[in-house]
Image (cartoon, rainbow, N blue to C red; front, side, top):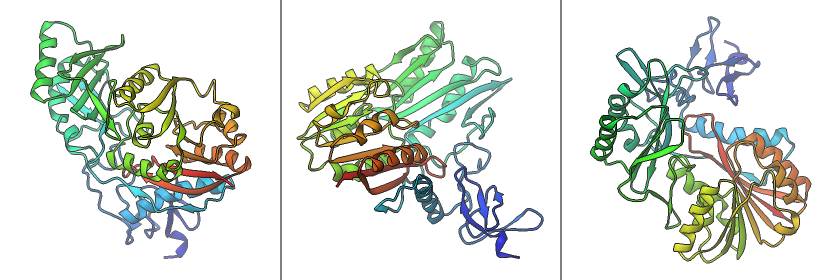
Length: 400
């Protein structure tokens, strides 16, 4: 067997790549591609922990051992930066969330005759993999899978998919059901009884006309830096508590010496509250409900935080506005923050912390900042979507 048939790396979408450039699904570094298309497994090929793998689209890389998966996460970021010609002072070893830690998930549900399927879709298709186990979901979420099948079966139209969106909040599991018509007294009583029996923090329904909360014994919150923030149904939250902690700690050195700083794309205040004690923080967010929620929580905690309803794509902070701050943190959506980064590159802000869920858009924005005179000091890769091709990171830029 020639060395050309050895898998030397994992490509961005999860396929292994041989030394001579062939793409091989479900292969690991060190595997050898056989003439008949099979694989001779190498030392980094792992036994997948889930019986649904690889059909379930929730994971793409369970066949990698921990070392190879961590290398993949780090390599995705290093490769994206190299593609833009950006050099980092250090791309640190990846921090990976443990199994059974995902605290937020959107599951699909559909009924086919008498059978109700509930789970993740197969990758690239609408087929629902009916979960009987899951190696990534937090046990509190997975415990609801079987009961939800029984609850939702009668409510889901034949061959019409609905969604069950689950989040682990301070008070327990917050459940949002989308795509069902929960009408009538009997259905209302069944929903309430289900929520009470399973001790849900909240149960909400969205039948296409907006979210209606059906059960909420006490206000549902999620806490950042010891501050409890009211949480709208299925509001954005970092996928795992471990991943959130890794991102927070990675950017802490950037903001430790900043007495006044800005959190751009602040959401519910993951970073503004976790890192803002004793500081003055400006938080900008486009979602009005999140702004009002964060403002109320900060006021109750007596934090010096000003929450601003501002669309940073249409109305980014100008260099003059940015220069009032001793540090900037931004955590944009997958598309990145091109409009805001152009102004940051023209500013005199001494330090920028950038949290990203897309290495490609991050590398593009990093190039703009470097061209504007910033130095990319460190990048911390974070794999909180374990066994997935979804990669996150936290980076620090400094102006010399």
